[in-house]
Image 1 (tube, rainbow, N blue to C red):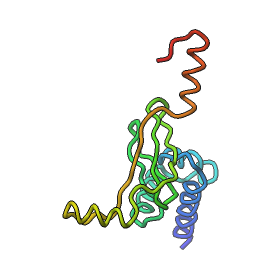
Image 2 (tube, helix red, strand yellow; image 1 turned 90 degrees about the vertical axis):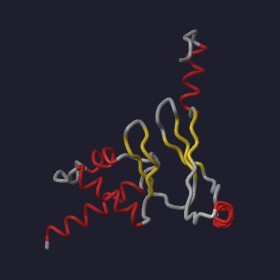
Image 3 (cartoon, rainbow, N blue to C red; image 1 turned 120 degrees about the horizontal axis):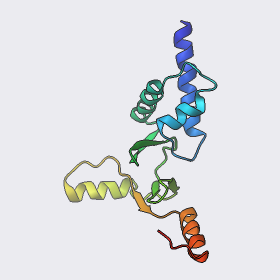
Image 4 (tube, rainbow, N blue to C red; image 1 turned 180 degrees about the vertical axis):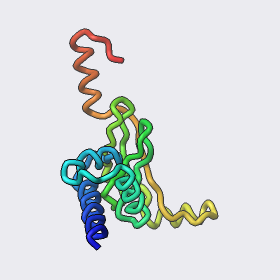
Length: 142
């Protein structure tokens, strides 16, 4: 019985870590954040629970970026921006495909479209400032 209770505490801690950040973490990030509090936590447990939260609708996968899957604890419809320089994943607080638009697209395509996600790619503000700083210092931007 104590083992199940421990597992539940870890599951809650994983979900709280995911919901308590805006960095769209990887399983490794969550694992590293929780390791001091739960030294017997495994990376496999973190990953399995993140996937379970996605299946249950408590989290979403943002996708694989730079070889690692990123997750989001915010499940209300919104888009994401991925920086092609640093790999940062940022929220774009706009729902591009509401229920009416999905219904229209379903009718147009003949498919039953149930959800949509939008991901923009480009260079984030921080990387742009870094590039500008290098250019102003006489160092050519890459």
